[in-house]
Amino acid sequence: MSRMTRMAVVLLPMLIAGPAQAFDIEAHRGGRALLPENTLPAFANALSMGVSTLELDLGVTKDRVVIVSHERGLNPDLARDTAGAYVPPPGTPFVQLNLADVKRYDVGQIRPGSKYAENFAQQRAVPGTRIPTLAEVFALVRKSGDKAVRLNIETKIDPRKPDETVDPATFVTVLLDLLRKEQFTDRVMIQSFDWRTLQLVQKQAPEIPTVYLTQQQGPEPNVLAAAATPWTAGYNPADYGGYVPRTVKAAGGKIWSPLYVDVTPAAVAEAHSLGLTVVPWTTNAEDDMARLIDMGVDGLISDRPDLLRKVTQQKGVTMPIPAPVTP
Ligand code: G3P
Ligand code: CA
Image (cartoon, rainbow, N blue to C red; front, side, top):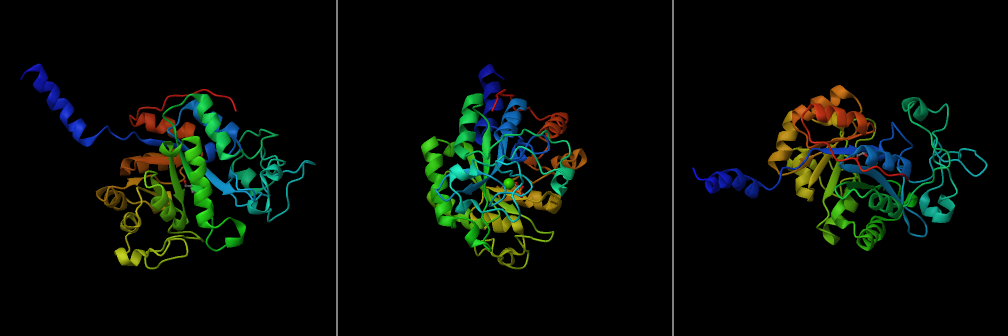
């Protein structure tokens, strides 16, 4: 066999299949087991250790600025006012606050004595930390020089609580305008439990991959095998034999992101046969990570990106390159 023929034998399958997709190591809320969730110190830490994706949550303020927060309003377990007092529950929705108001609150330390503090006892507090805008996160990514990292950005909107956020159309318009202005459309995936926003993204920005979040068990499932829910934009798994991956495919999703305890080898195989990528949330234990990787998932979302790097490295995954940066 000539040298040219040998090269063709090696390269042709790669050219046909395209480059192998690297395993997706996602830092959930920037890695909230390590540093305050959804903040610049957490994202800087994740970039500095090397992750493939920053996972984060979004809200829109009264003056239509996209900010980064898991809750739809000030979180009583996180937000302290200028006098140092944690805000009383339920916490004012961001849709009632301008950015300047939001920036007055310190979210750098979990409320001592709370269940959240107990769950993340190892988190290092960074007092004085503010809720970032999404534009500030983009600036941090640029500053890091990391050209490979992506952002998995979640529209936090609840179909049962329309007064607590902007409506889906406004949310998507404001978000897409920002992504285009910042030239980040090719570095994001947009995820949501509320599939209404994903349907709008697919129509208005079909080049952005959509991530369908599902939770089939626990007190508040957003997807049921036998019925549509307010979360699924009219898609009913019962119309697809009760199969969630088929429903996600029919809805136009590229990525299926299930609660990790819902994942089975059969569901992963079915999703792959439909061309979906599977990235479960949120695994923080080494044995769960290893079990899911062995099932063939394409990535994992974790509050412990350091541990996820360790486990995936042991499985032979090429590590994302660290991009040291300070917030
Ligand atoms: O990316 C999925 C995961 O972030 C969903 O859970 O509640 O942490 O936003 P949550
Ligand atoms: Ca999230």
